[in-house]
Structures are given as structure tokens and as C-alpha cells.
Length: 427
Image 1: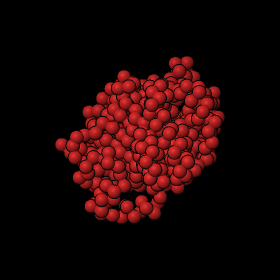
Image 2: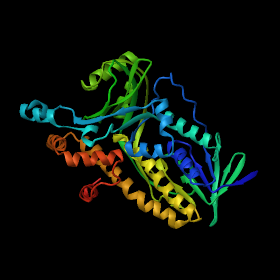
Image 3: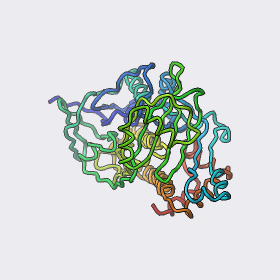
Image 4: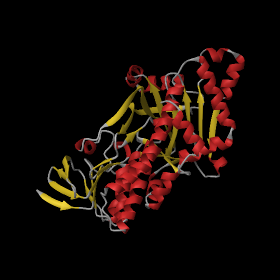
């Protein structure tokens, strides 16, 4: 079979892999990007896709630097300026007037105006981001785009890695695995993972609703899991939103089997009054929730980024942003190596990448687990403490805004006291 040499082979042309390939191409590396399929062309008139992500301001800034953000906005995106979190009033505490009043005030809301920002972030459909990235790669013209292409095997020695596809062979000093949580590339080099399956699954529902269009994303915690709303674009005068409904698998099986009318009724019964008046629910899907972390981020001349390295509870929509942060870190280190004519697969470079990214990813995973386990507990004393905490968080602007700026990617790191607090909490 034909063999072609590159500087770097990126396996996986999803959002993280495509963005990283574009950044490395711009830095002067010869890059091959492979995936099982090319992105489906975007159609402006199509209804919103089920797969959406909350893109933070930090991720937006990097996409602007890559020259991709304008292409995303030209397709469609939805800014959100406020984010609200509270707990459902139910059970014993709701029956005691004084505690019910406390619970009603136990809400924290982040507002872009408090941070002197135009918005907290954007909700963008995954195919929109991927389409804009693919278009930028094609326009640049320097990366080799191989799709459809299937990874058959991967071997490596001290000098290079060899990627065997069905009809050709690629060699490179570095292979980047960006092929998702079930990464075949990671499996090929025998990097193990630690994983935890949560009791709940999540159901994503695309809904049409009455005007006006929303600029807030919110999340209400219940004993069976959160219920969330994310605003989506207005298309041909129709307002859209995305709902996320966490529950046990059996309940979601029952909900998934309902027709659209019955599903709308179930949503109206279960979701809070903040939900806009619904007009339809034409699409839904469900997925299990798992936390997974690779035992190491690199092995030999293979390095992991994004979901191939880590997956987290999607509670705050930080999975894609963590992946983009991985990509930014690795592209910065590889750009420096390029300037110094260094080896892109040098062990010291890959170790520096893991030393920078693993603590940050672990910190976010810990924070999401804290929220998940803390709010999935039905005990009244703990519920009271949660409500006190939410009420306190809503009144302490400096601490609240620090968390918001970190989640938005405006600040690269939390303060030392907040990091210390998170790291001392049990998982």
C-alpha cells in the first residue's frame, strides 16, 4: 500500500480534532486529519440539531484567533447573557412556611452585565461548529483531509508512529487521538481509563416555543436529576430551545416511547414555570452519563485530547470547552517546538502537556461530581444546606463572579483558596 509521511496525524475530525488540526497547520506543520466521515453540509433552513454545546468566551476567543468564529455566527448561534441555578421546592421543606420561603430565594444567577461582558457564552449546534471548522481547513488548503477513512491499526517505534488505513499508510512523529470517548486510537496503544457510570441518563429534547426568544440558560435541580433549558436560534420566525432531562433509564425509556403530544404534556408537568410556552417537540435522544479519565495522556508518540482523554458529567456543558483547552495547550507547545525545529513527539513536550492539563481537567471533573452527588441527595438536612449555599452564592458577588469567569474561560485558573477547597472535597 501507498505510504505517506507527515509531521502530525490527527485521528478524529470532530470539533476538537478539526480545530487542533487547523491550528497546527497554521503553525507550519504538515498535518493529516482523518475521520470516518466528512461533516454533513449545513443547511440554514433545517431545524436545530439535537447536539448542542455551550461555547465559553475563552473558547470563542480561540476560535476567533483561528478565523472560524465568523463562519459559526454566519451560520447560526445563540448568545446567552444570564445563567440561573436553583433547587425544586418539594418534600418536607416545602411544607414548612419559613423553610419554603428560604428555598424560594435559594437561587443564584450569573449575569453578563455584572462581569461587564456582552454575554456569558453562546449555545451552538455541534454540526455548525464542525462545518465552519471544516470549511476553514478546506479554504486553508494545506492540511490533508482524509474522510471517509477508517483506522485499521497503529504501531510505533522510537522515531515514528505508523497509522494503517484501509487503503493507505501514514507515518508521523506524532499521532493525536481526538476520536472521542471510545477512542480506537487510545485502545490501539493500550492506554487504560478509570470510569464511573452515573445512575442517571440524560434525555435531550428539541422544542419549539412561543416568542420571545430567550437569552438565559437555566437549570433546576430535583432529587431525580437536573432539568435544564438552553436557548436556540429563531429560524424563519420560530423560536427554539433545547431541554435536558436527567432521570433513571427506565423513566427515560417510558418518556422516549411517548408520542409528541404526550411528551409535551409530560414536559409541562415536570419542568418549572420558567419554561416558555411550548408549541412542539419534534426530536429527542438520550445518552448515558459517565465520568472517564485516561490513566495517562500520552504513550510513546501518541497523545490524547478532548473526550479521548476525559469525559465529565455534562451538568454545566464544559466538556467541549475542556477539549478546546486541551487543544490550545497542545497547539501552543507544538508551535514553540516548530519554531525551535523540535520533535513534535518528544516525550518532554507531551509530559509538559499532561502536567498542565490533567490538574485543570481533574478540577472541573471534581466540581461537576460535587454538584451531581450533592444535589442528588434527598435528605432534608442536606437539602436545607444546599438551599442555604445557593442563597449565599447568590448574594456573594465576588465568589460568584469568580466561578462565572472561570466557567466562561475569561480567567484561566481559579484562585488558590477555591482550588484548595475543591481538591479537599471527597468525590
